[in-house]
Structures are given as structure tokens and as C-alpha cells.
Image 1 (cartoon, rainbow, N blue to C red):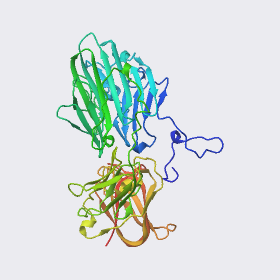
Image 2: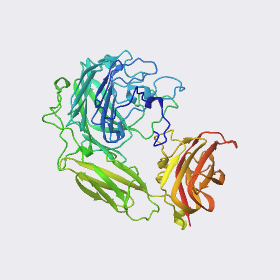
Image 3: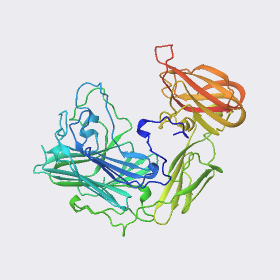
Image 4: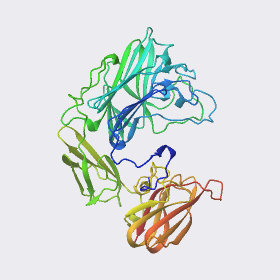
Amino acid sequence: MIENNIIPHFREMIACVGDPETETSELSLDRYYRIIETVSIRNSWDTESMLWGGLHAGETDVTHGHLDTGNFYIDSFGDRFAYDLGIENYNLAGGGKYRHRAEGHNMLVFNPDDQLEDILKTGYSKIERFEHNDVSAIVTTNTTGNYSNYVENVERGMRFVNGRTSIVVQDEVKSEKENEVYWFMHTPATVTLSEDGKTAILDIKGNRMEAKLLSDVGKFEVMEAKPLPTSPNPVGQNKNEGFCKLAIHLENVKDFTISVCFTPLVYTPVGGTINYPEVTPMAQWELEDPEKVSVGVLPRLDSLKIDGKDVAGFRPDMNFYVEALKKADSPIPNIEATGDGKVEIIPPAQWPGSVEIKISNGIFENVYGIRFNVPPRSLADEGYTELDIEEITASSVPQEANPPKSAFDNDFETRFSVQQPGWICVDLGKAKSIHYLSMAFYLGNTRANEFYVEVSEDGTSWIKVWQGRDGGTSTELQNFDLKGVSARWVRITGTGIVNPGSDTAVQGWFSPTEIKLYTK
């Protein structure tokens, strides 16, 4: 946190009595949290390279709780594929809010209608089985209490297979009468379905996962993350933009099993296919044998360079990177990489685009990617030269999702955010003539931003060279004349925002989406 100038949060603080040990603790990969009846399983503690699953059971009728007993979650290589949409506006009048209902979670829904609650609030589900070893894990729960008005028994389970490289989510239902059933999974991924509807490829900016429907019943479909036509639909609730639902729809069914195998595509064996487990009742599930199965270990890069320079922020366990091109017609740069396997660098079919770096150890093939973002139309198109940035610092980083580097990636969908007054500073490496500062702002078409610009030759003494506000009518780049001042460091301090209908600045968030400096 100190190194990255991140403001700590109380949830991130760790107390230590005495001198801390230098050795790394062997933390369990799997954990059962009693009372709240939740289990977490993972194949690594490296967030950017792990496969993680969570299953939530417990009590349904909880203050401020959702109808989510049986909800599951899946993360892979730093992205959440099976997602919980989170809270809804508490000031929104009425019940039946989508995000509070089972249909707004990754759950089963039986016989949908217009009732405010789509599962029974009296339900309670306990984790009935939790077993794990080095190569696998099993967790099951009985969620019959959610649906006892429709069925005789409902069980949901999750397990690691293939040496913790795939996660299976399985539902088993027994009913004396026929039902209409939906299986839902909310995801921010782009979803592509196979012709038979049995396979779905989920893609989050190049991070891809396969969902394979192993059971015979049903097929996948993609639905909007919104209430079913028969469901309540309170006015003003969140539209859940950026999310969809991977769904399975069954009609007139009594007893059935739904089994889905989730596998990050980096775990596809070289020259082979994913080893899908046989669909068996959860009562017959067994842990894999560590003597016969080893934990899947991916080959890793140990260096990655662009035009001879190390990729900023490179880590062997981080697979995806974004680089900003200086000009739209920039040539493909020279990519170099080394690691513990055979490396292949694959240029994009169309440039600009993404470069893939594959590394194989003969068992698994790992894929890294660099997406090169095309710059917007800017002063570079008018003969000016964009200056290279050597280092970026900030007064603080209160939001880890919006770090300083996001203001220099040619992506208007990302941003740096800091509470005002707050600053972001760049080091050019040596003193250079700076003719223009170009900036774009988050929500820049709805409000104006007040800020000032200082420069320094030594990083200690600062001279203010510009002060004012932007136009407040655009999210595109706006240019600010710095008169060719010579400096090594440039510091931009946001002091206030001017909301529509007002001419008075108030303190809020300083959120530039893009920052560029130009010389002639």
C-alpha cells in the first residue's frame, strides 16, 4: 500500500504481536465459514492467476439480505465470471426488486410468477458436505427449503476436478409434479454459444472460460439481466447494464440433474481436449487421488518486452496488458518474451489489435495478451509529438479499480479518480518543452472540472502555469496551452467540479480518463 500510495481500508489491516515471521504461511486453499454457511475453494492465492469458486447457503430471511441461498460465484485469472449484482437502491419504494430476488442471482427459479418473493423466505440451507485435498474439493448443500412449495428435494454442489483446473456446479431435483425451471448465472462476459447450445465461451477482454453443459437436459441461452415477463418490475431499479444471464430453461420437468463444467481455456491440454467428468449423483462424488492427479501448473513467462523495454507492471502471474499507441498508424512493435516453455508470439490478424504470446510446457499452454489501444484524434494528428511518460504518481489512490495508469491507456472507459483536492504527477525523465496538455474527463459532458497545472525542473520547486476549468460539454480530449514551458515534472491538481445549473465549484472527485502532453 505504501509503495502504491493506496489509502488503507480497515478490512485490509493486519495486526501483529511481536516480530513477524519471514517465512510464507501455508494458508489452506479451501475454507468453510460456519453459521453463514459459505464455502470458498481455490487453486491458488495469486488473485490474477487463480481459479476460485464460492457457494453460499445459510439463512434466507435475514435483515438487509437477498433471496440468494444457493448462490454460486466463480473467478478466473482476475475476473469474476459468475457474478453477484450487488445492492439495489434502498430508497426505491416497494418490493420485488430484481437484485433482491432469486432470479437476480445465480440460482434456480421454479414456476415464475408475479409474487414479490420467488423463493420461500423460511428456507435455511446448511453446508452438508465439505471435503478437500491437495488436488480437489467438494462442497454440497440442500436448498429444498427454498422451493418446498414446488418440489420434494433440491441439492446443489460444487467441486474441483482435473487437478483444480475445472469447477463443476451441479443441481439435483426430485419432484412429484411437473415444473417450469430456470437456471441462471449472471456474468459481465461476452457469451458465444455453440450450435447445439451445450457449450458457452465466456470472454472478458480476452480472458476466456468455457461452460460445458454435461447433463442431457436443456441447453444454454443468453438472456438480459432483467426480470422475467411475469416478474415484478419496480420503476427505477438498476438496469444492470454490462451484464447478461447465461441461462437454461426447462419445461414440464419432474426429476432432473443440471451439471455444468467451467474451465478457463488456458487449462485446455496441449493438442487435446478438456477432460469432462462423468455426471454422477453428488452422493457418489469422490475426491481425486493426489497419487494419480497433479495440480495443473501453467507455464509462465519470466520477461515481456515491447521494443526492448519491459512491459510496465509485468508479473508472471498476470496474463493481460494494455498499451497505448502514440498514433493510429503506429507500426506493430517488436515483442520479446521468455519463460519456462516454448514461446510463440502471434500478431493480430488486423492491426491495430491484440498480440498473443503463447507459452507451452508440453502439458498446458498458457496465453498472455497485449491489447494496443488506438489513440483518439489528438494533437498528434496535427504535427505535435506526444511526450513519453517515465513515471506516474498521485496524491493518493482511494480506488484501486481506478489507478493513475488508467489515465494513460488510450481507453476512455477507464479513469484515475482521487478526491479533491487531489493531484496526479508525471515524470518525463528529463526537462522537455511542453506546448500542450490534453485531458478528457469522466462525465465530462455533464459537468466542468476546475484544476491547475504546475511544473518543476527538480521535483521540489513548482511553478503554476495554468489554472481554470474545462468546457464541461465533452468526454473527448480538450487541449490546454502550456506555452512551451520547459519542465521535467508536470503536476495536475483537481480542486472542484461545477455541476449543471451552477457556476460555483464544489469538491468531489477529480477523474481524468486520459492525459497527454505534447511538444512541437
